[in-house]
Length: 325
Ligand code: 13P
Ligand code: SF4
Image (cartoon, rainbow, N blue to C red; front, side, top):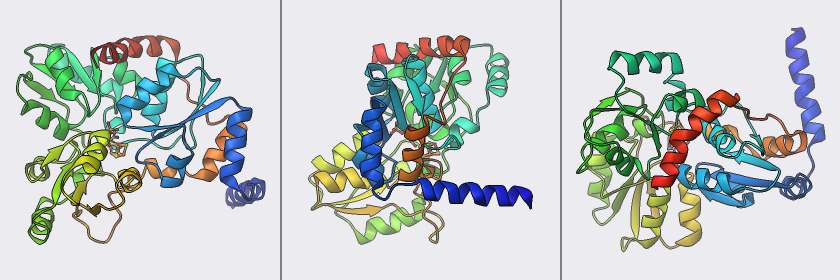
């Protein structure tokens, strides 16, 4: 009971503290703090519109490395903010909500992953950027969805370990010149829920539509897709495609940038297995709100930190990826 009271008192205090014009207050704080605001495409559109830079996970890592301001306010999920801290340790990195995790990163804990590497005789390890700093520190090379094929090829003939997304891994394996992969069996809660059966039905109703999908979707959905790419790749293709109608199998945050650049296109969300939920919105990404962004810039908290030995060990495979990209 006492706990409940404390919580509701805190909520009221937070409510009272919020300025009326949040957007303006955030911009003012951003300049006072000498901060830069980086956002992933899966953020709410009002967060994307305030950001200095919006990108996919590779572009955000590249941008974070270049930041020369004092503070990076990172609107994305924690592994992305951690990557920014690893690449640019002198900056203070803050996030709106420290609970913004990722089903892929959470499903691959460092101790279990270390055992997995040992059990398979310690082959080269390629890890997706959707992992914790500790898992990155155990890896030889990092990849994102936009360069996974290129990075896998860079590690030779294999077999190599690929973690943690099994759908992305299967897709990489099917591309020419990639090594045999030993696959950690993780999945993304958002991309896994698209339904191939319902997508096939939708395609019948829209025969001229082009289907664009993220490689974290499962095999059956990818087999029905015309174009497979990272979020940046999907946005670019949607804008440039000759097709007027696009069916999109990824988080629906990408719709905002497509609408801005190509307002005449008809965008249809690929159907999920459960018709009744907004399952194509990442529950972790959507924890970030304008209110929490304001508070994190005001309080410079929560701050993302990475212990120095882990940071140094994780930096090596990330830098290797950036050099190869
Ligand atoms: P991108 O590499 O396309 O940004 O994907 C990140 C991600 O979390 C996909 O779910
Ligand atoms: Fe992780 Fe999936 Fe959310 Fe991307 S969309 S952050 S992979 S849970």
